[in-house]
Image (cartoon, rainbow, N blue to C red):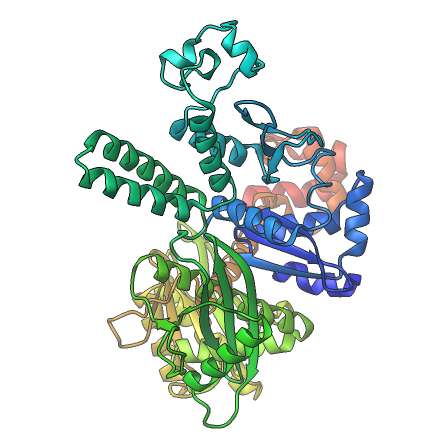
Amino acid sequence: MTTDELSIILPTLPEKPGCYQYFDEDGRIIYVGKAKNLRRRVSSYFHKEHHDRKTRILVRQIRSIKYIVVDSEGDALLLENSLIKEYQPRYNVLLKDGKTYPSIVIKAEAFPRIYATRDIKKDGSEYFGPYPGALIAKGMLQLIKEIYPIRTCKMDLSEAKIRQGRYRVCLQYHIRRCKGPCTGLQSADEYESNVAEIRDLLRGNLHKLIRSYRQRMQAYSDELRFEEAQFCKERINLLERYEVKHTVVPRKIDNVDVFSYDEDEHTAYINYMHIEHGGINRVYTLEYRKQIEESKEEMLASAITELRQRFESTAQEIILPFDTGWETGESMTTTVPQRGDKRKLLELSEKNVVQYKLDKLKRSEKLNPEQRALRIVHGIQKDLHLERPPKHIECFDNSNIQGTSPVAACVVFKMGKPSKKDYRKFHVKTVEGPNDFASMQEIIGRRYSRLIEENAPLPDLIVVDGGKGQLSSAYDTLEQLGLIGKIPIVGLAERLEEIFYPKDPVPLILDKNSETLKVIQHLRDEAHRFGITFHRNIRSKKQIHSALDDIKGIGKKTKEDLLLHYKSVKRIRLADEEELSTLIGKSKAKLLYEALKEK
């Protein structure tokens, strides 16, 4: 993957939890990882130097990146586990702080022990995994211990030693965590029966185990053996609780295809997910170029056929966002879920298709920034119900502190971005005291009467920082200039970010994530910043201005000498003419003395 390709792809990755997959030049998955923040995690592979040699080799082999968005970090962990088991990527076992992932072992010995290990030995033992983290392996072992009384000791439980009575039962027996095979209280057949069920559990066949326990519970209940039936029910509850907590989707939804649909003006996007054994083992998004008069039902039906053939799907159930009229075989069903687990599964697919569409748009706009600017401008036109796209927007803000040094700022945005060379600042000349409404009238009048005189282009939209009062003042001034109907104007109230229209008491409230609102907020903030900076500079100049600056004939050097000697203008006033002449000469001393006496 080239640097240019990466610079386009990485900034468009979502900042959401999910799993990412790296592919080599042959299209093989070489690494699967999980992330709380996909963009940050994937970018870290390419933006920092890796000291681990294997990681450097992995990065050099990456040719493409794919990802799956999920709801939470926990789901990402489970999905990663599912994908690793499905594809066995080359670098997953090798790359993790120089260690392998933990596995769970059923030890090849009499009354087998079951525990987590990273040390895999060829001694006839059975290993399950690897698990993507110690927490998942420990969680599985905890479930096994809660359901099955398996020994935890390391003693050699050979038949001869048990018969000789070498051992005594331990605490685990007394707290009913072990049935005491060391003293012959549990037979090898019964123990092996438990191990066989654990083997099924470790292979992921929870659904099979739950079904088996349900059948046994029913049989015990029919025989009025209620104690055994209750025992089976408790195990079913434990297994179902584990299933809900440790699978991305419930295992009862097995061998299912899920499709979701989204579109823009020219393209249809169809996301496909295949579900098996409680995990997502395939995700793919297909693009269709829209044809004339082709409905979304027809495009989705066509995509279902193509994707199922491409991936040789044998799923007997298809979950869809809407009915397509797609013809299925006798043994196949289609579902349009409205609630429950299948609905959640459809929403996950929809989340991925929306993200795919968004990422494609981001990448195309990164290659062509003008496209993004035009889209934003047309978005503002649509959201604010304007007659033409506002390619040129001007925003006004007043700034004064307790009525002193009143100023105003005008900032200009072109194609949704600041055009700083067109910014203007104004001293408020005709208004005394803190009167924002009158100040707004003056500045709007001065700005647009000048543009009219110079025959300069007028803006497509005016934004006033303030509510109904400032907006009404600006509107009245535009009306006097004959500009009503030529330039639309709105006001932005700061408290609730409401947008007001002239003569309309009901404000427009945009979505907080709307690009239109973000541009208008940016305008307002930029006008505020520009105005405050201008006002601060004026105040600073006034603070360093003194009465000496207004006396003709007293230059900068003379002023510095006087202030250095007398420390303040007040002390200079108290000095007599003769005293001043010894410092700055007779002629200047006379000018200074008379001027200060006059003041």
